[in-house]
Image (tube, rainbow, N blue to C red):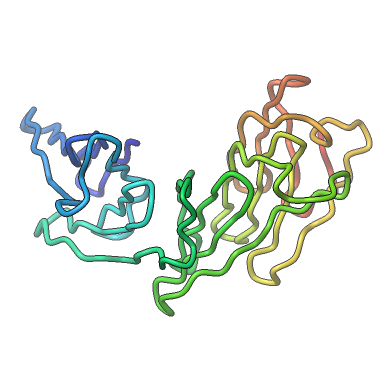
Length: 212
């Protein structure tokens, strides 16, 4: 993962730790964020710049923040044991406009509330399948001002209202994003950009009423 802070420095994840590249000084520095659990299969992944902090995850259970100015490290959240299946792996962490972190596993979406220190699970639901375990999340993106979450899966696209906690129907008359393996989703101001095998550039409105 890569992210840029408010000073213009680039933060990069690696198996050794978190690297900071100071562009003005042409200098690298490494921070060992997850000292207690850093191992050969743990990759420190920066995923967001929030104020003066870089938010990072170990891709499994831990979320931490490092202050860009003081380099102080604090724990944001630790996934509880009850949500740790053997093959649990965090994918695609993204903050919303309210300071929560949304992450995906293979077939579920999780909302992590930093403020309330809890996790909510939202199984993936598509009308054409009988069980959410038959779906694999491939990508997702949050539109921060509306807090609409777009989820790409191997069997189509889902829009989710994160404030009302309900799915948004997608009017996809041309079947551009229905029953298709979604490769890529990115939130823009008024729509989501979507790519799949059928079409490399699709626009889906935040309210799901137009797909072009």
